[in-house]
Image (cartoon, rainbow, N blue to C red):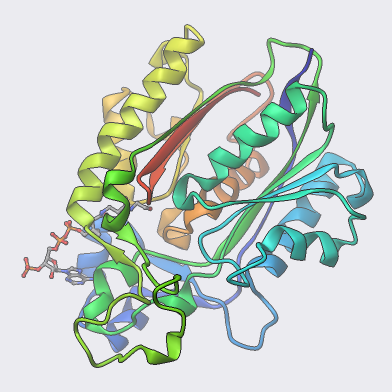
Length: 335
Ligand code: UT7
């Protein structure tokens, strides 16, 4: 019998910083609106020609995670790759990472659960490790969303929020069953699928060149978000799924040393913080400098939190996410 645990973490952000003022040159928005509604000051966008992409950023984050875990790429038994912005329509980016890192013929699984993708990935890795099938699993969240955003005023509700980046963790066996990933909790509700979505390209809309950027009806190749509905569902589902994890492990909210929420919107994190009665130092937020990096946001935040020693051995840690699908989940970790 094993538990799984996080043995090493890494993250990578592209160099190019896009401030709120930069965005206001492209669309009708301003620093005050963005900061007040989202808490975001700046985000990173991949620079064309830099070589950064979903898989290559995932590799950079993974190299840091492997180094911190003290293992070699050849020790990896499974790659789990979470993204909503894969390099190819198919295959997924997991196999690209495998080839770039030269990891033999190990299996690679891609997870399409957007902002909840990393927690789904941790849960998948946890199951494989618990059954003994695999020992070392590389879980990556990486996003290159900037190239697909509508940077005109029409797309401002979405495009001011999102940013690019990657995070990765190495998960491995833990023989002490009171430590490591204690439980994961996953949910989805497909009735809201279209409310936070990018409809094309799909089997009815194959050719992106057909998009008419001047046609206000032809929005299928840009992300769409019903912001207020997403916000309302997010605060409810975050709370539910955190409580589900606490109850399962007989933890109280006051037991939490660190909550690392998906960096959706600082106002959502603050709402959850108040609801669970947590202090500022018990909730890790870095959305101010990176925006919402969907599947990459939790592993980037977790990696920075560990690097800054905001999470230490013995801490009780909760991860929670909500996003497109809708999908949501939590992971309860005895660090
Ligand atoms: O990671 C996945 C999960 N995603 C989320 O959790 C995001 C959840 N939703 C949100 O964070 C918020 O709904 C947003 C930040 C996206 C939007 O904030 P909001 O307070 O819900 O604004 P709104 O959409 O109700 O828009 C309010 C006003 C509108 O103007 P009028 O109709 O009142 O004149 C918008 O047109 O703000 C306007 N607006 C903007 N103004 C300046 C919308 N986007 C912008 C913008 N800059 N970027």
